[in-house]
Image (cartoon, rainbow, N blue to C red; front, side, top):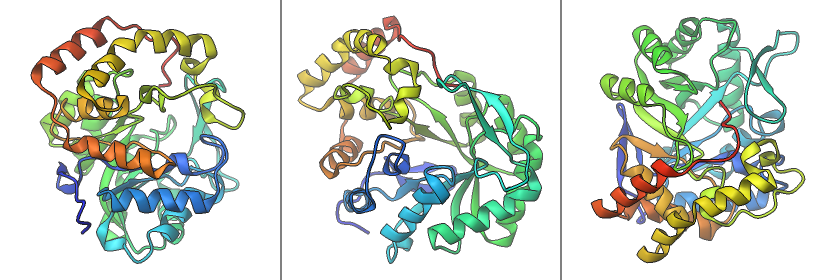
Length: 331
């Protein structure tokens, strides 16, 4: 264990650091170009700063790039970390792409979570990660053409075989969570949640009732809540997000000025305020911010040790209630 160990939190029966690390940003084509050496430094910085929970997917980067990166960078430290990965986007050759609409500029995504492919997905991820088990395994999105219960049943078989430790769900509704949990216990549900994307309250209620942890993806609003996002350049995935259109982003920055003002009053970074605020929303939420810069990673993870006074939480609640965000949500 690192001497910089962060406070721990429980995702169901799984104990992880209160803040994890979302590795999507470390693959080319996500937030602009990046080389593997820089990405590995970022992963080492996250681990050295106390993160034990690393989130990836077989769909991040070409040919499982993100998983291979984590496997290489964290080799020799496997027992110090919890690895979560997701499946469904790397559709096998000859298999049908099951498309569904999203709010990205390109309009749709495609998955295939047919049970007959799930073991192959897992085995490919195990090879890429260079490990013998996946600690938390999620279907990345529900497949619109495959009953979620069938996909969950296939993951349950992997758990029985020892290839996977626990089942997670990603981007689901409360109804889907309850139905899946009836097939096999769900450890964590991953959903977008931040100051500029409220959580689905019904999903949160269901997670609390079932004892399921919540993993918050994009807890910094794809970087917006850091207050440091400027022009979104070519090769940056955020070009597909309407909230980052130049006009929308300027309006949103103006509307979040009061939040940044509170961070300044407290003497902390806007990103730290956003993460600390999220940690105060539920004792079983674990945000997974990502960054490529060791200094920013250390700053983000330090938010796990920040306690916000109730007066500050009340002020933030009032501001956020009245703040309208420009640009469509994604899901």
